[in-house]
Figure 1 (cartoon, rainbow, N blue to C red):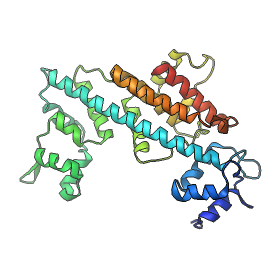
Figure 2 (cartoon, rainbow, N blue to C red):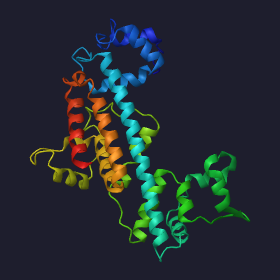
Figure 3 (cartoon, helix red, strand yellow):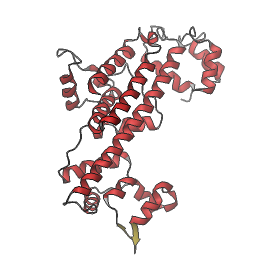
Figure 4 (cartoon, rainbow, N blue to C red):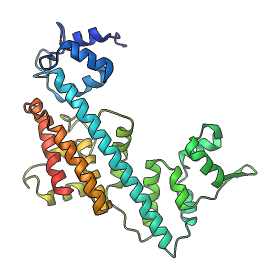
Length: 313
């Protein structure tokens, strides 16, 4: 059933009026909230962060002020920016590694590996399928490259890609498969957790809310990777007799995978710069930490992540 559309005044009333959700406007009054919802963010996205709060028997949120939601939305945006930057750096460094390995290997000519990969995987890269269907619909930034190395000869598509230009037309998911295929076909050691960061990367790139489910663990059809559990146990951030409950949350799990991967891939000078960005983010996230003292889901999640940042990076 469709819900009735609410204007800004009705949205404020729905959150904290008579028959409302129990959201308070003590730290930020209703006019300020209305201004924020019209200029900086929108109701559906802001309300999503309320999932981190419990409700009472009257179905009203417990100890939730609108300012807390606003603060979560800011932290969420800053975290997404860092995640996306880190994921793009990982992608670039992985591409650099296989390019370097291929260039230095006597067993690789750069072309056979692409043909072998396309032979093993029946599904062609999405950019090539789109190009075959309608050239004009293909991404303009990839089209010239595809035109040069993907040729229709008498109704049969022939591929003349080498590794170094083939990886430029792949989505991250496709590149991950190619990277793993290359490592299995050569003596290049595969990095851990490469296939764990794709969903996190996409969520950040598409501006999805990512901090709106910190209270949810067992609700997910999700199992933490055993390797990650082993690595975290080795860091001694949690007592041996305690369960690694936070890893049952996909966001926390994948963020930690990203930390391990960035640590493994980055040269020291680059890692030092990224570490500073992480600590700047932590400092900003703690700016209004008093907002979340009474929320165990948010406070414990942040505390767990900060401990791991200090241990890993």
